[in-house]
Amino acid sequence: MRDPYRLDGRTVIITGASRGIGAEVARAASRQGAGLVLVARDEERLRAVAGELPGPSAVVAGSVADTETAANAIDAAEELGGTLWGLVNNAGINPYYHGIVETPLAEWDDVIQVNLLGAATFARAVGRVMIAAETGGRIVNLGSIAGLTGLPNIGPYNASKAAIDAMTRTLAVELGPHGILVNSVAPGTIGTEMIAQLLTANPALREKLVAKAPIGRVGEEPEAAEPIVFLLTDAASFINGHILVVDGGRLAAG
Ligand SMILES: NC(=O)c1ccc[n+]([C@@H]2O[C@H](COP(=O)([O-])OP(=O)(O)OC[C@H]3O[C@@H](n4cnc5c(N)ncnc54)[C@H](OP(=O)(O)O)[C@@H]3O)[C@@H](O)[C@H]2O)c1
Image 1: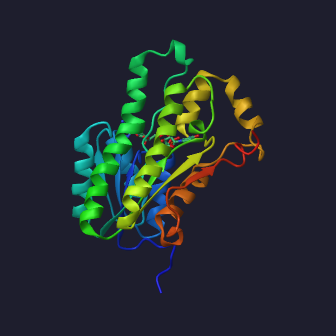
Image 2 (image 1 turned 45 degrees about the vertical axis):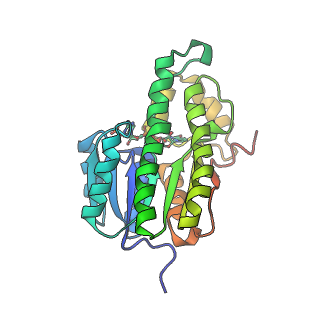
Image 3 (image 1 turned 90 degrees about the horizontal axis):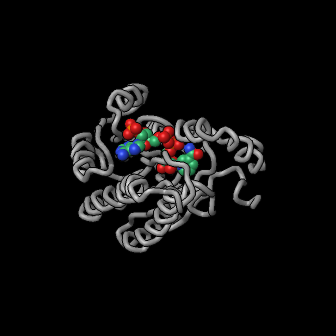
């Protein structure tokens, strides 16, 4: 009998795999036997991640905001072989810190292009291949607890993540009949470069973020990555359209 936690013979495309949560998803999925297509802009860092993996992988350098990057990722998955089974829409940015009334529209554009339209472009391209192949599959989108609350000063980011959850539910309904299950993971604060940047610009935030977490610390990258990999496996075969909050209880604390 197949181990429901294994991913042997299955290929997963991971966007934003050059560092942080995406790189950690790559390590965890590779340990479970998946073949991986790693996508991000920084080719050198992608190659460094690929070099650490125990299993097969390919690297695609490009922005998720360019439609050709998704096409290149699908070509790379075909070359790698195996079934194109999974997509992890993880690439994301959160570079600005102003109230909405001070936010220039160009900043909305930047964030929405990457966080929402990048994910939509990949879901569209990969979903079409999975439907045609009739193999079923999995899409995991990265939301955030920021999409479920009104955290101040990161309005476009919050809106992009709430939209990711809305897209997840719609995709789950549209693709479920094809055996393609679609879920979001909504992390709390995970200690990656994205958070380091935010805290460098706003040191007072650190205390607030930690004070609100019932377990008294920020999360580590594997603590966000392992639940994402779980959703890619057969162990999660009846989970569809779900928003999995991975925040150490921060949202529960209000
Ligand atoms: N860390 C947290 O506390 C937290 C909490 C909730 C949700 N999340 C979400 O989790 C995901 C990963 O976050 P992280 O903390 O790991 O961030 P990170 O350390 O900043 O990594 C972001 C990744 O996305 C890639 N990326 C950014 N813009 C891209 C673009 N235009 N095209 C392709 N790749 C792009 C980056 O690679 P390149 O620069 O090489 O392109 C990098 O690999 C994001 O969607 C984020 O919103 C994070």
